[in-house]
Length: 87
Image (cartoon, rainbow, N blue to C red):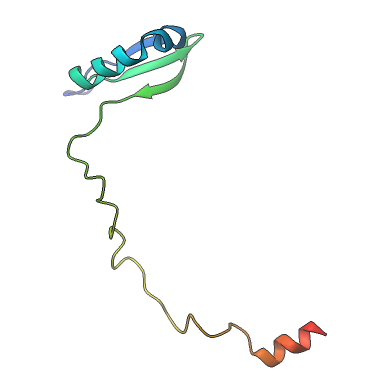
């Protein structure tokens, strides 16, 4: 296991369902992930929330990532050709 990583606890889905709220509180308090299993196979990982994530950070995050090349308002094809295709 890499340094700085805490061991992930595993719990059966039936136990998770019965103790959901207290388990979520424990994950938040200890900052240790929890793996939920069904018949021994993992189905979900519950990870602690990151405190430094700003919920509004995605707004404007793509600024400057793309540009418009050409006219985006005019029709793509000549309207005369469109009428010819319509008949």
